[in-house]
Picture (cartoon, each protein chain N blue to C red):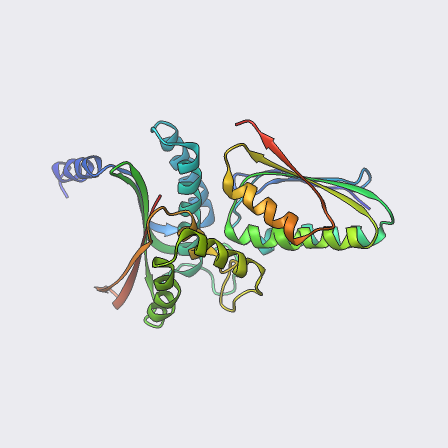
Length: 128
Length: 186
């Protein structure tokens, strides 16, 4: 499967999905006009990728300094797909990067960890 | 308007600690540019990182609300994206707290719909707002919502005081309309 790279803009994150290495990352900020339009092709790529795996260790790095409410909802759907892949026998590490005193992002990360227990969740504090 | 009036306008804004003011059409690229400008302005002010982050979050939710929902728009009929709608937005400082105010025209039917969403948020504690946010985050998308239906809840969550709102009837070139005002204090 072809790797997916999308360069960042002011309102959309860098998407770097190295499917051949099983290393996926989102970095930057996310407040596009239409989160479903932006994340749609990304979700499709993930939905095509995950069923091809068997007992694979996938590492997901999320380093988003800010995301708006509609991106929050789409991110939750995305982590749901990873959780399903973990339940299906893969091992998914989610590295959740947040700036030290950013409670909102830390709390959302904890919410993700509580909702999707099959994920190997690692909060990673960045010293701001 | 004479140059003296412009000076009065500018002085009033300075006296009232208005950090930022924009009125006109809102599109995603305008929101992004305003966001960049707002951040630059905030970096020169004495504000905590937490306050800046919350202010930015409230600003984006309110500005994108105008892009999506203002009743007066220039959006092409066949376009689901690249929306352009009319509104105003203020960012200022009052007694050591930042605030964001947003105004946009809405349809007559919009009044009760918005009131029903906002009124309960005014009396909730921050814990109750966060609990409702969590519940909505997991709920199926609301019909008629272009975002996640979480915009007002995000504004309320990031405010330190209860949100304030009002509906003002006005008469313009194209007849009478209602302007919706929303204020959040960080």
